[in-house]
Length: 297
Picture 1 (cartoon, rainbow, N blue to C red):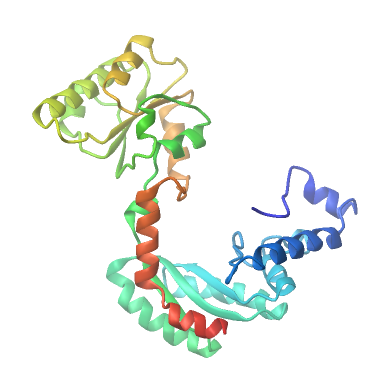
Picture 2 (picture 1 turned 60 degrees about the horizontal axis):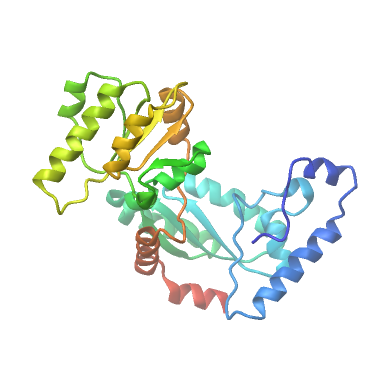
């Protein structure tokens, strides 16, 4: 989608004069013009803050200026720290003559949303910039899927590919005894355990079939991430496949896997209809499109 890509060594080549800014701006303008001719409204997404891209003289504010596009600043839900971030981003826009059409706060905690909306509106009045939306935190949009984990660990599912878009509310690293593990098993849970912990894997399968027998119409929404140097035995893989439990194996330690997951940001995929519909609903409910269109016009 981006007309300009930054492969390895791109920045050094630009600074060495091997890549000209004029060639980059030409690609950007040409692509924007081509898309705009076919659309009533064109949205250009800027990655990160307004200063991203400065090393090649094409940061987000500069691109907005080049395309004569007003900017909507999106900040994390908060008050003081969010306003500080907005101030830094607004400075770049002012420097390059870009109009800031409004601000949207994202992932705002519900119990603070009314307060933040009231006081951020007051703070933005000094810049004569409207608060266009105050979007509450939505847990579903932050929940990773097995497909996210495939991408994160660069591996394929060993079982349950039909549930690659299953979401998980809970992620649990299991290093306890099977007895303790069974006591705290909950729905919508990803289990992380070493591939050689056959006792945990078999306990998971036993729990799955117990629930399935008791409630055959219910979908037991669990997933398994196996870790460690040694891959799981084929016999265990076959049993998990029979249960249609989505499972993958990552050749890293459980601790490293959990650390990677905690630093990973789940994206909304086009094929993930549950997240797409949730995102559409929350945007429609919490963004003032009338004010947005008024500012753009």
